Image (cartoon, one colour):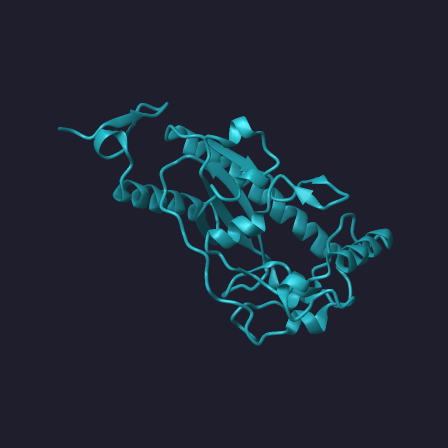
Length: 249
């Protein structure tokens, strides 16, 4: 008896284990191959999340979501030099850097989606930064939540994803897929005794308990920065600058 395969558009036979069901070896192999591909594109953070429990909250058609059970989450680090210039407000350099990082992530997500499709599977890249409901500050999905489920970090006091190595000094993008991949697990780490973001926040929106983060105060400050023409969209960067994850110096 031979394992049943699936033929991709480029003619490759994809191993799915016995009776066409992907086994753990297949999932690990696909995971490592995809990770190497992403790293070759410059990705610094890579993880895969099981999205079955959260995809009901996505602003994507149900008929399309039915085929997806995983999300690949990719992260790019931000420039420490550009962040260092931020003091009491975002800078024009940071605004430009923020946009370039998101654009680059979108391009990489596009390439990764094509890679997955050439292997014979479905992939849906979700924009790194695209608000579809400004009143409620909502996107197609929460990259932050997917990043957490993919093991890239924890939700910090600053209401951002915090990685133990780079803190919150990175941007992420997600690709929904049905490709057989092993999935990562959420980390059990947390901010612990670090309170740098609490001290840095200009409007005291960040509290001891991450669940008490004041979204309204934060958003009002973002609108103030935008009205002052410091930046052309709702970003800040102050708590991003000070967040170092497990590196408190």
